[in-house]
Amino acid sequence: MLSSSREGLTMKVYTYVVEKCADTDLYVGYVPGFPGAHSQGDTLDELHGNMQEVIGMLLEDGEPEHC
Image (cartoon, rainbow, N blue to C red; front, side, top):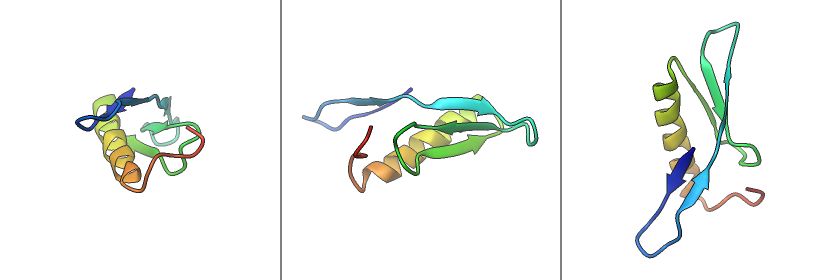
């Protein structure tokens, strides 16, 4: 689960789904209904950091329409 906030704004929480790829042994995460919000990592900690980064970059373009 990730959250974002700015002073004076409401905090929004994003929950992402995590799967372990049997072929690559990587953790893969995505936010359902948030196009482009997906990443991967060797560890859950790495995936979490990657998800924070990708969601932050996507939010620079605005909130997703269906999330």
